[in-house]
Length: 245
Image (tube, rainbow, N blue to C red; front, side):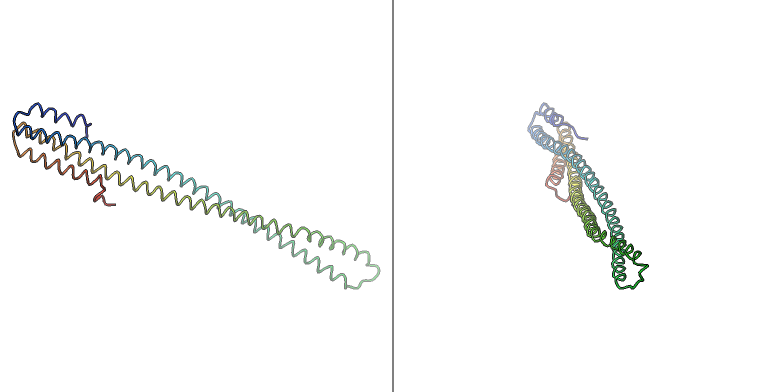
């Protein structure tokens, strides 16, 4: 629909050659002014459409980055769930061994007060040694198991914290993407305004050219009105007026 600035200025040059009286000179001056404005609007329209494509590309790239971060957050959540399960299993195992440790202590206490005959003394010694070994073993092992359980829980908490941080980062990226997308829509609307303004200005050049050929002030007036409307539409796009945002 739009041509380069050189094409727009050709209308004025051709009109200059046709100028022979005051009317023609006035119309020729109008064509030159409209053509200059048309060249500016065409340039702004090209820039707006290029910026629209650039912003859309940026929005898609940021969305991709947000999705990647969300994927990392989900992986961390999965790892946190695995560690939480490991911690639950570990504490269950700890409770089992702690109960066995307690039972061994109780048994030792009972053996101290049970009266046995002389023939059972050797067996009593073996039983006491066995339970004492269990008590000694878990006196050392149970504190270690507590520390191991805390370490597993800490690791799960670290995964959750990192996952939350990733989710916050992903949300920030999504907001940035939405902002870029919104700006691209705005720029697209501006480009549409420039295109409409470009069309009005081109009509203005054509109508003014017809005014020279036909010596009709009606065509000249129509051309001026079309150019003014095209300029006003272009200015509404340049200054972001009535774009619906």
